[in-house]
Image (cartoon, rainbow, N blue to C red; front, side, top):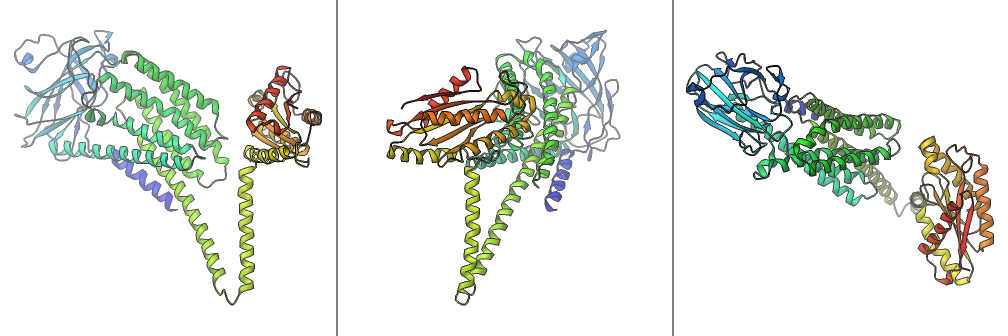
Length: 620
């Protein structure tokens, strides 16, 4: 119950943090905004609405006061991308420059005002009346004279009268969009500063959280190599933290103010693309049975393509393809939700925490993609989704640790009870210790079995085969007797898997393993093991080449006699196998690798000869 309450509490905190500003929407009309009734102590005013618009003109306040502006002002709704705006019946290009003006009437006040300026594409200058208070990049009339910069700013000014005019110049020759997506926000210096500090604190908290989570999970992956998803998830957290440096208050530019705009933009988009394969690999490692390896490979290939496209072209080129990557991300979100739904069939209690975190993350991704598609103000809630998923991961890990501690506590309690009354109950304690030892032995046997037995086919795995080979090698070398190795591969098993599905593929492996177990493991010293995938390896001590070949052919026939349908096999209507046989006497100084290479070589000879047969080689 407590973890659920914690999740609800965190979600409520995030919603509150995302809505920290008290903004009133009062739209401007015909380039004028009446704020004479403005309660400046409590409200921030986003400057939505109609602004005066002078296309292909870089006008300063003096140009208007001097009467040198003869053109009648057009009107444009801000925030907006001007290449979606028509002028004289024609759609404006993304490249160009323009001047915007807004006249604002305010009540009597004795306070400094502030303007919170969003990211603009891709250079701008802003005046209040005749005072230049903000400049981002270098505004120019062509690509050579224009210098882009991505840096939101906060500018303060003291209004000299009840009415003041904002004059804004924007030029763009580097981005596929010109203008701005977020509104300029007006407020008192105190309210602007409070709003800005809240956003910085919230963004800093998320970045710090993601960095710590990334280091923590990479550390877990280092110490628990059997669970590689910790590595991928840790790297995903670090990439998300880096990406979050490039949005919002753009901390990255503040850390490296001299970095070129083009390079910063490339890093921004490359970090965006890198999220997709990392998330796909996390899902694949968390839910291997519900995920598809081929889809993970597709995400890697697509990301590499976009990374190279971004590295070796300019923003005018690679940004044109961004919309297609967003479509691909939507497909990935759909795939992730399918994996999540399929995983509901599992019986692990932790799945609800993981599914909640992953589902929430998918929702945040869709919100960010929707904002990009519709050219809405940047939402940037994806890092919140990652943070929420980290918390869900932490709950899962905490639950596992708690379970382990409870188990240790129970064991300690049992041991304490066994030790009490030691002198009075020697026989009883001895009996209890014996029972405890049996339990420990059973646990050890179970752990050993888990380490040496293949979980799917229930026959020995590669580790047990390697250990057994060393034992038999010593015996055969000492007694000068032959040692035979069979290398077996199911013919066209990939086609079988692709056609019948992984579940049928697993059933096929189990039946083939049963044949090997019956034929090989029944021999006095024989051992059959699953080597990996659809490959099996058998060790037959004391068997010469003729005897081993007879056994191999018998196995080959019995596998086909299972009559497992295989429509995609060109050699038979049923599942068949190819076997490579190698026989040698260990005194020739063979080792495991040499023996396996020779058996594998014989296996390839069997495949080259048409499959469904036995090929052999010998050093005797």
